Length: 318
Image (cartoon, rainbow, N blue to C red; front, side, top):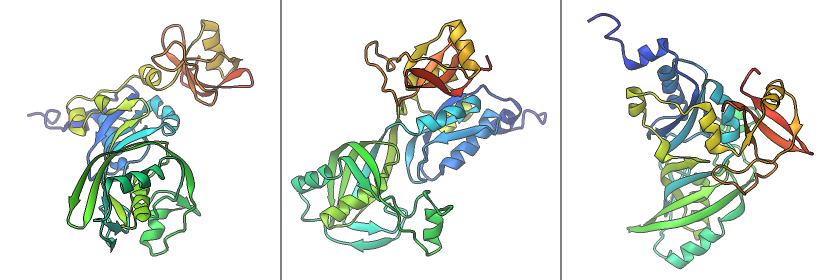
């Protein structure tokens, strides 16, 4: 064999840059989100790769990864709602609020019935105030909370407003003195499912922690579009930039003159787009709109305020 034929798929990819776009990864358990980004960098042949919304190592499921120009979409995708399938164990508390931590307390969950559980969940649904886990990536005085916690100086984190749109129990299993609860959660960006597990256990007087977590959707991107790292190593595919934005954001069609003006940072009169897949529902003013040139290329993401549309990020040079 020649040296070329003995190289791995990843090594060959590094010499053959791939087009930019989004990669919807089905993250495996045991890997950090940064590990996944590093793998995609090798497969894509570029270091310009990032992700929208961290998943803990134990979690699996949808991780949206941007390659090249698509990295400029990520900050806006991070803010979209997310959906998870989770298993919460009532009867045990842990140091990390999930199964990777040490057990810090136990209490029987034998008294928890379906009605009691449903009442506690109602209190954790809607617009709520949530204290993030101390083992999290939140920065405190320039340092990550998890690093401070592991150094023995756990910070006192302030509660933050989040929205839990749906918290639906799908199954309950009794195991000795604890109770495992399977649930589907649809929530705003910034919601910690580990904290929901902790707070549910606290409300019921049993303690609680997250046993497993699978993210099934980030905004408009779900598991149906996701590929495993093994699949991507066999056939690396990206969702082209124009398509990726069309799936996630309301759309505005531009004239050739508007496209040129916008590409150079100019402003346009406001003209509310419609949500993807609809012809009637206007987008809320605070939500970005994807603006397209007559040839179908993505020109920019827009925000509309005070009767004007201005570019948040420009993708074409004009």
